[in-house]
Image (cartoon, rainbow, N blue to C red; front, side):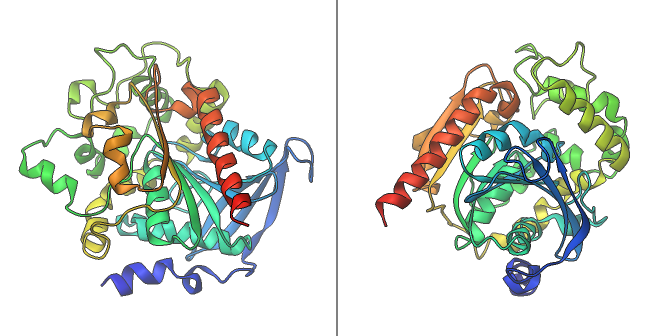
Length: 356
C-alpha cells in the first residue's frame, strides 16, 4: 500500500523531473520591480496534478517555507525578506488547499505523502536539486516529513511550533483510548467545521488572537478545553499580528473557504495508517532547529526541551523557547525568529565551507 499510495507521490517521476517546465503562464513580480533583489516573484506551477501558487524572493541556495492552519504564503513575508537579503533564495507556497493553490475536495489528498510530494515537485519545476525547509504548525509537520522521507532533497530543517515526532502509534488513537474526546483536532475533523469557520472576518482575527501571547493567560487557547477554543471572536484588535497580513488572510479565506485547510486534520488517521509501519522509529539526521512560543497552547501536548527533542533529531543544532510569544512567533517575535533562522542558515554555510 505504501508503495502504491505513498512512495509514488514522493518520486521525482510523479512530481515532474528536474528542469521540466509545467509552469502556467502569468508569472508576476511585486515590490522592487522585476529582477530587483527585493522583488517577490509569483508563479503558478502544475505539480502532482494540481496547480500551486509559489512566491519566491532573492537568489542563492534555496529555502522553502511551509505555512500551517489557517495561514497563507505571505505569513512568511518577513522571513523571506530577511533570508533573501542574506543571500538565499526564499520560496513560499500556498500549500494545497489554501490561497491561490488548488484545493482537492477529498481529505485523502492531504497526507504528508501528498504535501511532501508537492514540495519535491516545486523543487523539480524550479530546477532546484536540494533545499533547506522551514515550516510552522502543519507546515512544520510537512517540513519534518520532507526531511524524513526525502533526505536527498531536503538537507536541513527549521521547525516552528510543532516538533518532529516519528509516525509510530497514532496519537489521536491514544487520545481516543484515554477518553480525551475534547481535544480540538476532533472538532476540526468534523464535516460541520467548514461552516463553523466560514465567517473569515470573525474567525481569522479570533484564532490569531486566542492562540497568541496577546490573549490573557487564563483565557488563551487550550487544545483540551472547548471553553477556551479557537472559534471565539477576538475581544480587541489583534496587535501582535501584522494588520495588513490579517486583512489579506481574511480576504483569502473569504474567497476559498476552509475546507482545504481542515482536510489536513481529516487526513491524519490516513497518514498514520500508511506511515506508521515503514517510518516507525525514524529520526532526522540532517541539521535541524526547533523554535516555539512559550505561551503556545500546543506545548501542553509534550515536554519540550533540547534533551527531549534530541533522540528523534540527532542533528539538532538549537532549541529556542520564545518568551511572551504564543503560536505565531514569526509575527509575535519576528526579530528573534529571523535572527535564529539566519544564524542556523549561516551555520549550514560554515559547515559546507569547512567540508570542501
